[in-house]
Picture (tube, helix red, strand yellow):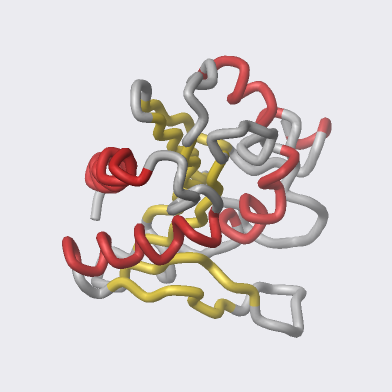
Length: 172
C-alpha cells in the first residue's frame, strides 16, 4: 500500500459518504473508522484495526488505528474533522498520534501515515496546517525518530507533507 493508494481510498470513501449528507454517517472519527476499515480491507486485504504496539519506555501497549501487514508494512492513524468544523486536524490535537508513529521501527512500519479526513465544506490551506505541525516535538527519550507522512484529504483538495520528529528547539 502506497501513499497515493491511501489518498485515493480516503477520497473514494469521502465521495461515497456524500450520499449520506446530514445523516451523521462518517461525521466523526468513531463513525468514519469502520467505513474506512471496510474499504481498506476489501481493497487491499491484510488490514488490522486497533493494532497494539509496544513502544520503548511504555509498559502498556499503544494502539494504532490501522496496520497494513505485508512485507512492506504501513501504519495509519486517523483524524476526522466533522462538517461543523473544529481544530481536530491541527498538530496540537494530533501530537500523541505523531509521537506513536515516529517511534515505529522500519521493521514494523515502512510507511507511517497520519491520515487527516476533512468533512468540512471549506478545505484547509496546506501552509497553515503544516505550520501547526512544525511546533510539535516528539518528546524526550533516547529512541530513534522516524518521519511521518501527514496526508490531508478533503473532497476538493488533497495534499501531504512530511513531519520530521524532533526533540524541540535544540533538535531542529
